[in-house]
Length: 121
Image 1 (cartoon, helix red, strand yellow):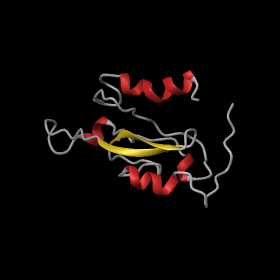
Image 2: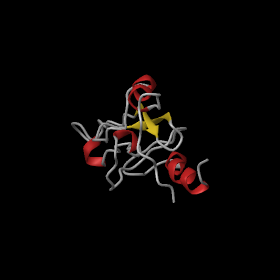
Image 3: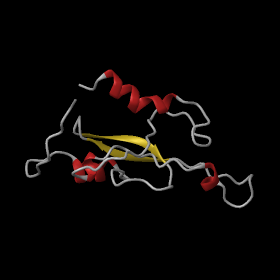
């Protein structure tokens, strides 16, 4: 079971309505930031929404803004399942799949795959 703090950390960004690194729009799915840790597998990486900086979003003149969020999927090593989230195209880590099926194929538990144990504190 996720702790309350983990739930707040994961879903707080989705409650925001604007002005997070530009013009992040509210949605039902969470938006995440990259970590500063090493992980034993891409499936252990936390989701990374790869939010673009305002200057990265501007193409051409200042009225031609590119605010495109794509639905992607990440694997949650604590629950062993894949979940949707929004992502932009300004870099992201490898725990970022185009489809639910791709995420499940790469990371979902199977009888012939073993993962390192997670240390929970």
